[in-house]
Length: 356
Image (tube, rainbow, N blue to C red; front, side):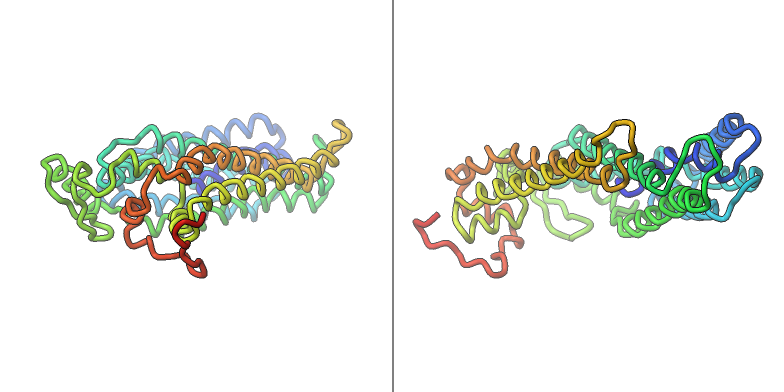
């Protein structure tokens, strides 16, 4: 879902550039409005067809088909040139017809994931999942908008003039080929999505069995899941342990209670170093606000922002790490929480009792 969001973010930024400097119609503003109308109009008109396809063939196959249409239509735009307004109209209509699929198929598949989570936890956590799925595309949108513009500027882009062949080639490549590449990657990821319609029906049946206090079977792993109230680890403790990855918990079991605090501090420090270093590099590139900072400067600033965000995330985990180190959860409970994943980390020697 996050990877697929790139396929819309980049064209959304570069469509005016592609229209004005590659297609070069007589009235760029008018044709831009026509292209956008065709794109969104095709998406809305084809929405009922995607609904019917999802009911007939399933959500995942329909979503994969939409990737094929978007990838072929978007990638073919690379071969367009000056005056190709009608071919672009056709390709935009073809690619835009898949736009409607993303409006409801991805959220519908996300709802299946939430149902699967309820099968395991007994809770409906739409808010957490929605916040996560809403936040990450925004992180993607920042570099998707900033990096292409920086690349064009570094190649000599000048507004409102005929561009050099290098700039035109860059516009075509970034506008058409880059989104197609991410769409292929998203297709490969979506291909492995395991929750099809029979699995989803089994998930709902399992939730119903839990509601009656009965065991259920995970349709994906075939693991027997007791009702949440009858599980070895209570839900608040399990949520607390979710502050840490399985590897971090195994390191805690194998290397002593001080390990989580050290791991979190080390991760936060590393992110801080990257943020400061990248920020300094970006600041050196922006000595003059009237001058182009270049692709390196833009990438450095974006990297600094990401590193700062990840560093803050690790700092927010520091309190939980101290609680875990203080013995908030017994080691045996952690082993039950990890289950088969409780095997020691390769190369880690179990801690000697009494040593941190």
